[in-house]
Image (cartoon, rainbow, N blue to C red; front, top):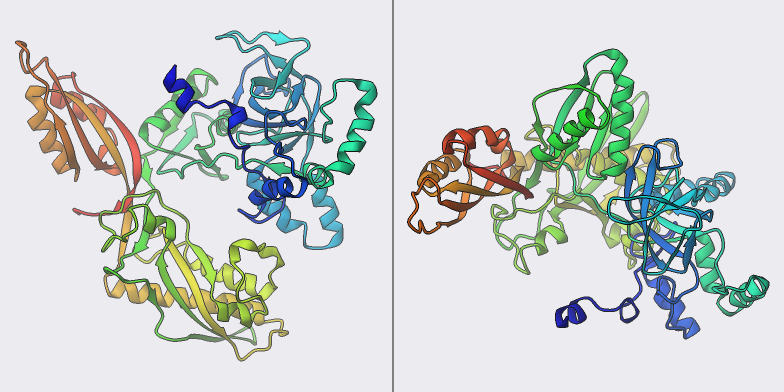
Length: 542
């Protein structure tokens, strides 16, 4: 009980969850609730268990045949942070993943802005609630869920894991129906900032899924089964955010976190949906990155790299100087000191980011002291957006193979052009110049041998008879594995073939595909293993 009191505090003693305003830049809206608290001297903010306005978070989505009211049996499991959620309530479904795209599209023109504002928070009506009692999911006629509780909601068609649910209006928290309107009016006057934020839309951080590391090609047994396969994969992708489905007219690719993940998806296709599929050979997801020497901040181009071409009678000319350096997240994952050459660094890959120097910001008439993270890119000029697009496009394909780069920051230090900013070809020149500068720098790094391929690595735990430990260790060495620990069990009077030991190692994912069959052969069917994705690390031993 002491541990429960110490490590599981009462929700009333915890800070409310951090919120972000819909349409605001990342990390910008998180400070809004705190500012609201200071302005109103009210310690109870939105998300606090005692706050009257309803805020709920969808943490899981399942499909139960005959249960969900959305046609496909979709049931959303939600936690209510504040307020009360009732059956038949109309709620606004706010998805954090579409925040940036919606805010971008809303700035194109006034008419599109009005239309996109309507799309910010689509309204759905809760069809009912299910009772959460073990494996029973009985319908609740008058379902109600208060702050701190979890509930199962049916009838929400477009909801996915990580969505935030808000009511269509800021509730007053008064149970008396006769006083609701007056209390709501008083609340608006007393706390107008909160009411405006609630109506504009706020959302929680949502769910961040790890990037897939293994891809498998699947194909239906017949052309008539292809539509059923597509529908089944669409449902599975809603339930499992870490599952990525890519469909084209000729192929269907599914990507996940490992071989076991793919086996579970294929088993569910057969068992739950009755769809038999043919599978291709698994493909591992590789990345590329730049190797930096000890104490080196980054690598940059040799001065300004000029691009000057005439395409279709239009001159495209621009000069860019940039630097590639390790992302802060990649550098800080191993502590304050950066790794010498990155060989001991094993972390999940992050997509490259493009930043602007003060000189570049001044060139495009921006505040040189401001930070790019505090701004929305849709407010940038077309030429600046083209510059960023050109740099990002070149970072999507490395030079050692068709693999995107990772864990890098492209810092554009200086930009210049002989063209006028009012010239119609200026955005195209900026895009081409940025892409050419990145390509030139990457090619020089390849010639210097300073680029490496990153491959996914797994933490493996193998339970093996003590007498077979030597065979397993030899096999791991052949598979380019690094043994971290071997826990030898005491025999205790038994034979070594029946006493199990534990081997912990780090092995490239490509080397343990189909490892279960090999392990059974090595251990006479008595060995077992589990694997967990650790991160991407430079490819070695080939």
